[in-house]
Image 1 (cartoon, rainbow, N blue to C red):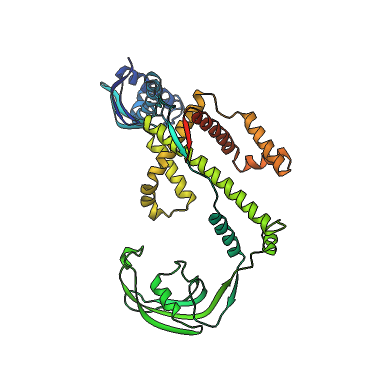
Image 2: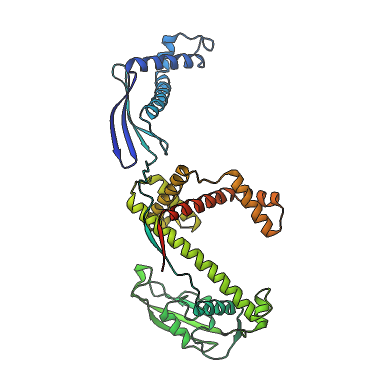
Length: 414
């Protein structure tokens, strides 16, 4: 055979194949390459394409060999992928390429392949669904948070206390002891916007007073180099504001939205909390079931896919390049689980014919348009422009897959 696989090595989903191309096939490829080169090069004393073949082969030997190797490796790759029945998911790489007129061409082909997912057991699991009940405490906390958003801040002429908003000029000494020019900060005492030792300095000041005092940095400070250090701090307090919450009454309800009374507001908030709790309970059930499925059907995931997802997380969170290594280590497991989850959904959807169709997406968009009271074509165009049609398709497919999976197992209520 002109193309042979001499050896095969597997490491997870990575494949390494030692490929050999016969010397006769290499000679044929060089001959074809030489003819192509001869048709394009210009040599003194000869018209284009009329230079003697022997002269062209000698003068352009490197170009001819490079073109021949490129064509042979492409041909070998196509042949090996088909003969070995591989499904590569990354661009293949050639290593240790050697070419010889007597021995032919040899190289090692590296690629990552799509995992084979058996999923032999998908039924008979038992999972627990959390209780999605909304308590009065949860309701009151949400209402208080909404009140807090409508709070007003009133200046006071006294020392600040926890919860007050202060405007303060701060300067921290450099490592050589020099105290630079102060910078103005606005912060709320007790919310962790400054280390506790600096907050204590501020709490001791009255408006329009200042101080300069040594401050010890905490032993758990994020910057390890600053932990436990004592630095001179200059602080000048210029303003103290105290929060005042609005009354919890019908007027607040009307201010917060289209609610006729406080009772209507509280009902709407409870309904919203209940909906969110139900959604979280459903997500918890799905997560538990997925863990059961993965435990019963372990499989490798492509490292390249995990890396792509980590990079997507990093881009979404705007992670600086200097923090990428630590971020990648932290999110590696999360990204791996996400890839496994997607592969399970994709596999089940394919086997059970549960994947969303174009009509399913159209129907969903029409439903969304009806709820908004908008034109279907306009909603569709907006979703398409925002790249959200694929997201809707995945959501429909996922709903169907988990409905099918949950139907094969037992769900108990906590």
